[in-house]
Length: 68
View 1 (tube, rainbow, N blue to C red):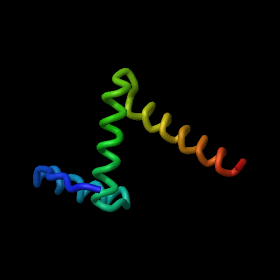
View 2 (view 1 turned 45 degrees about the horizontal axis):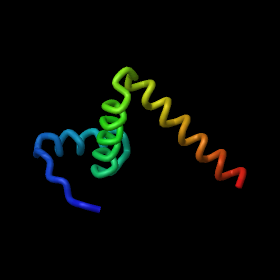
View 3 (view 1 turned 120 degrees about the vertical axis):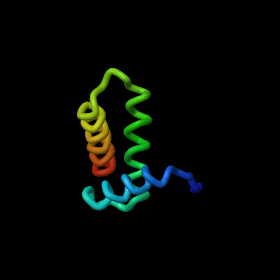
View 4 (view 1 turned 90 degrees about the vertical axis):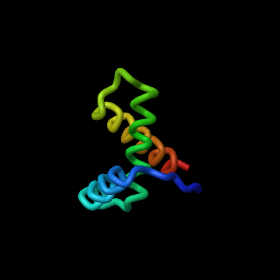
């Protein structure tokens, strides 16, 4: 785990979003980073498609764990 320095305004945005989304500030920042990373890796996908892809992957992992 490391420390990442971010702009104060972005930190405030993350704080507000984390309250609405019922996440910690760190979890909100991690979520934004992951979505941004996936958007760069898959530039033709929309936000909704990226989220659907992640939900499908999570469901697949849960199914694999239940079968084990």
